Length: 51
Image 1 (cartoon, helix red, strand yellow):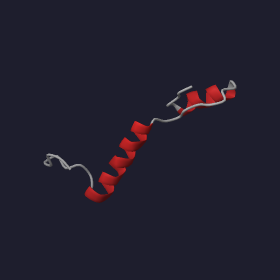
Image 2 (cartoon, rainbow, N blue to C red):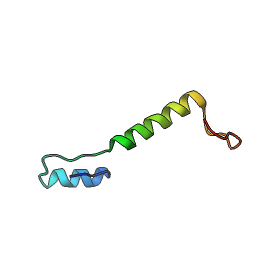
Image 3 (cartoon, one colour):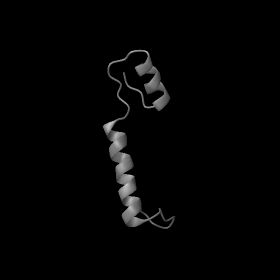
């Protein structure tokens, strides 16, 4: 079962699911990349064309 919503994951587990995926590798990579960029580059600048 694949559940990106924590409430849905809890419901699947409560119903007896043995395995529930609660994230995706692409989403984890994207959020981590955004956090690193924010830390080392700062908040997005409207005048900046790219990182």
